Amino acid sequence: MFRLLAIALALSYPFVIYFGTAHISPAFLAGFLAAIVLLRVFTSELARHWKLGALSGVIVLGLLQWSLRGGTQSLMFYPVLLNTALLIVFGQSLFREQSLIETIARKRNMDVGPHNLGYLRVLTAVWTGFFVISVIISTLTAVSGNMSIWLLYNGLVSYLLMGVLIVGELIVRYFFKRRLAHQQP
Image (tube, rainbow, N blue to C red; front, side, top):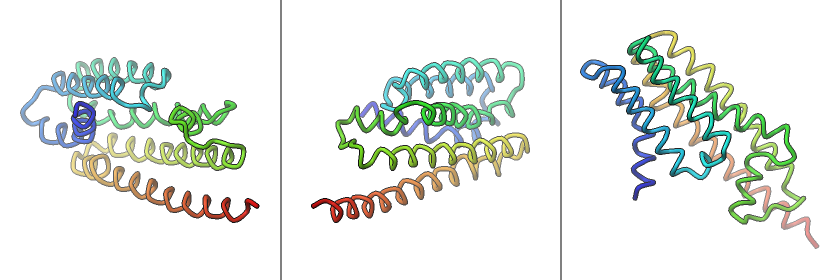
């Protein structure tokens, strides 16, 4: 239940910022976003990865400082910071022996044999590419200062694109596993 609340709050932040800026101080909204980040660090399996936890701390500090100095528009950079943190964590793992998705799969006791290591690395690279694109678009929407465009991308389009990526990966995984099953004697 607590985890579902954390996810719901994390997904609601664009709407809270969009509708809250007219009635709530930027410092309070930044505190709300900082609380969401900290809540996700303690409830998300991915965020428990120590590097993402450390980057989340930087996001919290950045949010608080920006809101005190830059006002409402600075809050629009929250998705930029979040996507950048995810880009760093996913991207740096491509230069390690184990990619992040392989590490997560191993922690979940999933079948991680030599037959699918390449697949897991490519999947990590695909998510890294997604976060590169998302950082660029999030930055452009924040710099534009147009709250409607910002909300459209960060509150809807980015989640739809993630959903498409997840569904696409499930389809590819199905055919990958089928092909592996046919190759085994």
